[in-house]
Amino acid sequence: MLHVPPVTLPTTPAAALLSLQADIDALPTFAERVAAAKTRFSSKNRKGDTTFDAIKEVLTAMCAGRCRCMYCEDSAADEVEHFRPKDLYPEVVFAWINYLYACGPCNGPKNNRFQVLSAKSRTIVDVTRPLKAPVTEPEPGDPVLIDPRREDPLTLMRLDIRGTFLFRPIPSKGTHEYERANYTINILHLNERDHLPGARKDAYEAYCALLHRYVLKKKASASAEYLARTESALRRTHHPTVWAEMKRQRDEIPELRALFREAPEAMQW
Image 1 (cartoon, rainbow, N blue to C red):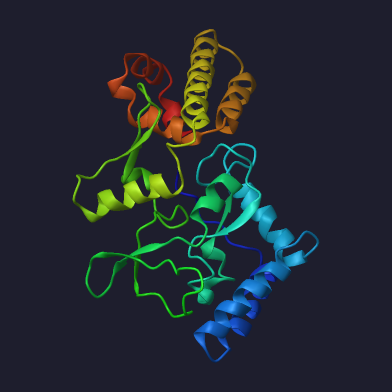
Image 2: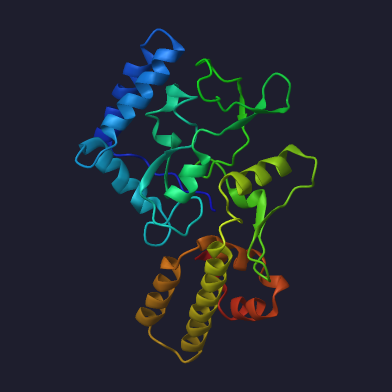
């Protein structure tokens, strides 16, 4: 799970989102705004809608690999996901910065579950609305869930590429930062889906093989075109968090230390 570089939405769909959001914001009560947000988004988020076709095209270009989920990087991204759930935050139901492209196995469990670091008490509060509960505004606060559109998840969690291929929080237990990392890992089931560690291990081996091939061909004075193709293949490989961790942890793993010493330019890939 990596930071998603910012991309500006083209003018026409951006203007359409602003207009749609203004319609929601104009409603008099919070409950009406929530109801309209859900209904209006469902009616717009369909194939053939020019605004959301354009949005999905841009989100696809922002994804890693071949349109992989922005959370797990494994399954195909095919759902426009609201970082702040529309059931709780109708004021951003049509906000471009609130959109991620996700897969069902990530978006489904997350659903409308959400925690915040309360602005008032500075404690973590679950603002998820229970089924059939009154539709009231959630307590103000900063999200506990890590937002890859706005921040770098790898400042708070680390992928073990030396054995388990599981994510672990970096901050110390008992800190809000630890809780943020732990909550993100758990709510998205980043460690609980059995195939994910194996997929990350496969990606690690693929990255190593490509980098090893690049180093060998570089030493053999291969053409710049050939080396560029190898770099391009590496950039398209799934689970780019594995690659990011290979660069971060290179000095801890002799094989990686040697490869990156021979190809220091790969640190910029």
